[in-house]
Length: 168
Image (cartoon, rainbow, N blue to C red; front, side):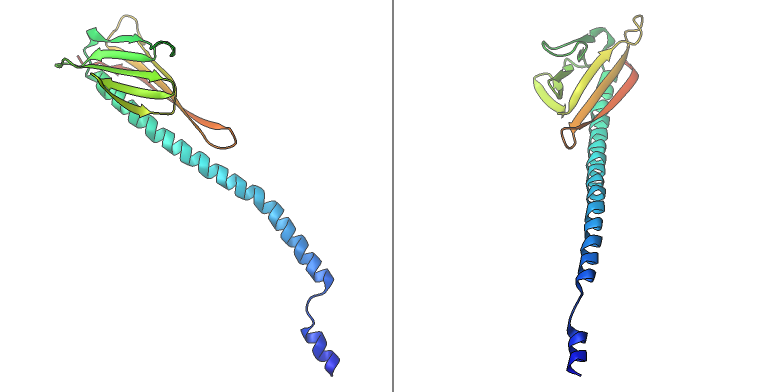
C-alpha cells in the first residue's frame, strides 16, 4: 500500500524530461529566426514610413516655393564640395527675398534671406534641372533619402517630382 502511494507522488521519468527538453529546444531554435525577422520587418517598415513622411514634406515645401519664384531669377548650381545641380536660388515673386534650397552633406537646407531651416538630415542625393532647355519656367526636382536600419544596412527612398511649373 505504501509503494502505490509513493508511485503516485514520485514525479517524471528521465525519458519524459528529455522529450520536453528536446521539444523546447526545437521551439527556441525555430522561434529565434522568426522573432529576428519580425523585428527587422518592424524596423524596416518604421524607417520606410519616416522617410516617406520626410520626403513628402520636403518635396511639398520645395515645389510650393518654386512655384512662387520669378522665372528670370532661377539659378541652378552647387555648393563647393557638393554634387552638381544640388542648389537652386531664386527670388520670390512680389518680394525682395531670395530663397535657396541646397544640399550640405546629408542635410537638405532651406535658406530664406539669412534664416536657415533643415528640411531633412537623411539626404543622399538632390538635383534640380530644367527638363527642357527652351522652357526656363519649368523645373525638375529629384531627391533620394537614406537612413540606417539595422546590421549596417540602410533603406533608401527615391522621390522625383517632374515638371514643377513656375507661375511667375
